[in-house]
Length: 430
Image 1 (cartoon, rainbow, N blue to C red):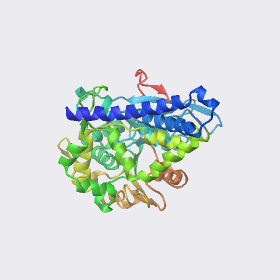
Image 2: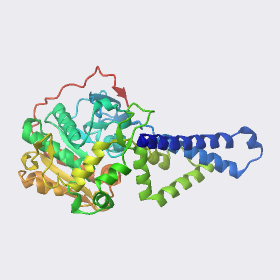
Image 3: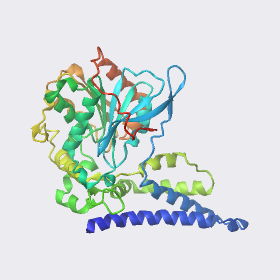
Image 4: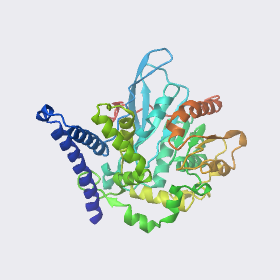
């Protein structure tokens, strides 16, 4: 119970700060005060506006915000987000472009379950839509999932990916970003052994910790330094009474956010103080660079405790994927069983989360795959975020990934997927 009380205490602190910001903004904006202009009141209103917005974003799932794209015909085509598979812990969604024939390139973008929503890949999705049919794994916030739905660990995550790939058929190209790279590799190997016809045509792994020990970072050092008992005691809490998942053990999003912020506390503090001054001078806007970044960065989700703990224990400490020892429901997965899925790894030269060497380690595990189907690329000056969403992705990496997809798309297999389930009410406009 004390962990449930701690969860509610964190939410109370967040809610209080949001209320303080709203109160400061309302008080400093009182019309009577405008008769005697006071810079202190302007600063107070600006502080309130920035504070209220920041703490409010922490419990709001961002919208995809992708309303339309311009097609080759020069027309704007509306985008609908359709739910293909609906599951308790995550959905498979499709960005359907209205009025456009289905594209030959069909891409499954595997989003990380690492504290942020799948909308973190918004710019990645937007950059692929003009050239591809894009499907995305949309993971749910664990606080909204009732305890009755059971657990969700790395094995369940892997089986979700297996089901998603089977649903979309073999004429598919998979791109895994960051954290899901080792599990996506494992899911592909699972299909290679159990259902070879359902394997995708290509697999692109971007900045993922296939072998965390290949290059040390703060993340890998932390995973080695702490014990599983310490993690259970300090990081795991129970969802409070406010949400549907009351009683579920989670790694809270607010706790994750505090860790994210502490890694670059000086930079974040300066960013917010500068934004307050810009707001006071009337130079800020809803979609300025600060709000555009932090609206997404501050929106965090709770992670199922068993998923977080099993990731640390089996991927980082046990190196089960790196040593080809990963099992799913007692079934030993052999990565060497992949013999005809082209695999490309992408790394950033300045990636301080998954350092160069961690992702390319996947190629050494693919003992059954000919070298002609293996590829690796390092973007010299890109950090972790840049290799899938920044300028480096748009200008350099994306064209290479599309070329890799095209090179492995000859004589597409007959599609064996089912149509999107139109009857589901989860279908909505982006």
